[in-house]
Image (cartoon, rainbow, N blue to C red; front, top):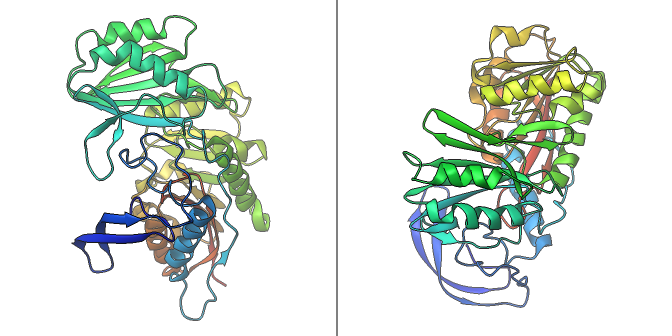
Length: 395
């Protein structure tokens, strides 16, 4: 339960009962002797770090157990199940977040409150990594007077860079004065070098709306992993999984974003066809391939990965790599699992063990085997976990 830690004595009220679980809220809590020290003034009101009272080692043990429970049921009765590899801890567990989405409503700019839609006004957030603390302070000062109505602001920045980017999305038309304030914020040598203002289908650009991360330009509005040090470990593991067993043929990368894994694969000599529905991200990926001298190995298609377009299957892939959103990739895995024997390995990166288990089971039903799974703690102080799973054709 939110706010409780191992060893606490809790009086709780059940608020929701489902077939497999129940939800409850804490009514009275008597602290035990194992609670971790809270390092944020907003802990308990902000919904961003619900596991902060739990010692970090206990957090990681719980994440590891969650992954084992979810994926341990995928294998058929005659299969010993996947090889569970040790959890990779996300270090650091403070000042780790290189991208964050904030909300504004009723004059407040911050995160949603625990268990609701109220916005908790946040002047500083201790899990933000540089340059985001300075970017947040500058954003509040420059844009605060113009944040009428409601909307979201996404902060992003390369680790230890001097400045970052904003994606600003008001609900409805932009409040008066917001455009001019954004232009003034970006104009100079301050902590914001680029911004995108999105009003429905309209997109206004200010400055340089991208962040250079490991030589790749990620658009301000494109998805990136928030824990950059942990993401490097994940990327190394993905490359190793793609090369494992001598499966060094072409790679089909689905849900590619703006190249989180693409260039690491290409730099190891692999030809990559990357599919990404976000046209801006796909365009940035192709531009980066040319800039890095990898255009002969990287081809990005702006398309729906779930439909697996015909153009994505030339050349025929030996390895498929997926990194879908939380909803998973049911349609994509159905199409991949039905491909011929030339596809030898599916490398699946997931932020939701439940949908990963569902999709892996669909592959198993079509003659595949879940070979291994490894959790990565890329979201410290939350119940979220990233998982790298590898599927191979059953013997």
